[in-house]
Length: 160
Image (spheres, rainbow, N blue to C red):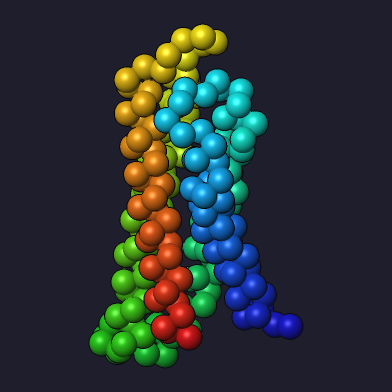
């Protein structure tokens, strides 16, 4: 095993953690919550707050391993050849989508995931319209992020 193999492995683990976590959230946790106001303690137990730490660790790992993997190609091909090749065009598309995903992840994890539990109603109270709206926005952004992640996986299948 060499450093390149290790970086490939770490890159794969990070992708599985980030995208797999999003799939779990959208297929399991989101339907469990629905549009109902959920007590903040339940949201924390479900792991929504905890997942963001794994997501950000995965993003960091993807950044390091991705730069390591991309560096030699840029060094040997140069920017012009890289961008003009099919590989380079697909990789550029992937990197733009990753930048969008990281931006969405930042909004969801640093803004929405912190505000939703604070907006949750007390026992016996109905959820506020602001909470319901925030939950809907959370779901839309999370679905968009997951879609971008799946597109990136498809691009990677084409590149390999």
